[in-house]
Image (cartoon, rainbow, N blue to C red):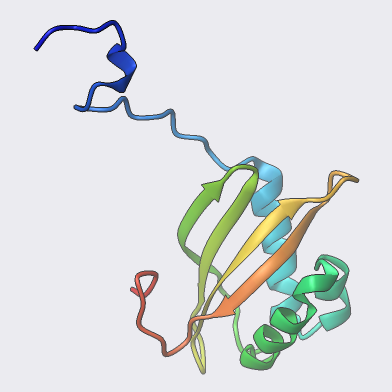
Length: 127
């Protein structure tokens, strides 16, 4: 087939994009948020949550029994634009699995934008 000059439109192998690592402050914010939930400190977790996600926070806080978990296992992560999705398992009794999204607000703070309790669910994010 003749080359019509538009090589970027040709189907075929596509270049793999550069892997973008999470900034360290994302993991610090996630740890701070999760530890607040593990302690049962809803006020500290709410301070890191955007108003549109308060209902998600209530659902997540109800699923996590305070002082029952002492370990955090990060089992998944993704990035879309400047928002980071993290999937977490809290082993303990009862074990809890959830995912949440962190984004940066105009003040530069990382805040929770949405959360989903995945405990007992089977989905593409289940493992």
